Length: 280
Length: 336
Image (cartoon, rainbow over the protein chains, first blue to last red):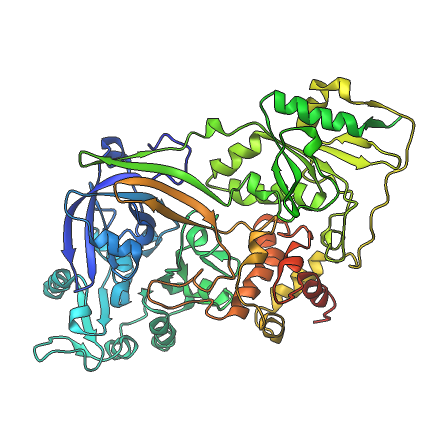
């Protein structure tokens, strides 16, 4: 199928594993059916794909697994609409379509030798998780790694088994939090909103890159905190998650001003985001 | 002596092209309106009115399959659409506002990733444009850099002459080939005057000046004042020769069906709605601003072209009377 010049034709992939991250967020591990595609498919952390449930259509998610882990890709999504509900209805062994990888990526090589601070809220951890594992798999190339991750409630935290793994590693500092009222009696993280918890954790901005992903309201209150901590707009990266369809700069819906998130992004620095028409 | 083709021979040309198994599409009476429709004979060509809808759907259909899928014995198979079956097509009798549209849309469908559904149809098409004598008070092609006799986008261009017949100009190699292949129908004649083109109310606008204002006024009270009444019906986008936003959806069951690309409109409230419920263009004037910005700024930023041919259809179709010509004229008149 890859030989076709039809840009809308997906590769077929088999669901190899399913993980329910929360009551409504699911991870699918996908393996391409065509051996040549399995061998040749490569991507960079930050790129996205169009995933399809045949009969229901396509949805856009980042590739949530790291490019350093070969042989499969993962996507992670909340069941909220027609396509995501259909994808949730599929079982191990079922087929999905995957078009991609699309968009730009995090310039990870530029981060070599630097400290990294990852800041994510809710379902926005998957777009950073690909970078986190990419960097952890090349651990010696980076300085300190800090992860600040929060969700509304304990049950809304995704990748719980990996959070536990990061918590136990001595080469990662994980600061986990939930919104006030979202914590159970045994919660071992912090209670508070991500921007506040980040300010309290106060990672040094010295030789450090911040990678932020979350709902618009979280981004809005996190950027001033990073500024107070001393991060320049060029040292802050984010990935925008606009609604998309084609993924390849044709269909006209993901634009923020004259910037096409699918082609010019989805990864931008805070400086680039601030230069855009403010329509988020 | 000018090169001319008589009206009878133009109709004969259509008959010949149909015999050559080409799909010939031109303005045709369809009930109470004139539409671009396949012509069975030359006699069906109706050059008396501007077609109600644009001719863009010849290259970019309202809805088309982009793949089919079938699940058999537990195995899902996806099949490509056979684009070699797209017919050789001749669009005839398109005024400049329609004939020029593909020359604008080529940019978006061919940059980076190539949309072969559009591009294959383009390769297989020849456009016979005609100087427009049917303008009405909604027309403003002259304002946006075209003119009733603009040849942009046409392979062969016809100019109606007083006393009948058309002067013709082969604009491209495709146009030359078409003339050469049917040389008997084309000839020379003593100079005749072109039919007069109707005047347009709109002044010629400096598109760079409009863009310059748009560059600096993403936030401006104008957006609310012009689009407060927009009901988001999307009619303007659907009949526009240059609007090209689309959606992709599946039709069928999980076991058997097709994936289809179909027109969409930035005026629709759900167009940019996120899965979370957050919508970056959550109110109608932000959506209408995007329409104006896309046509007169964003497309220019990206491709150096204006995404409007001044056909006036959106003005005629708008149920609440929004007039894009008036809007860009207002913007043009702003000092800051």
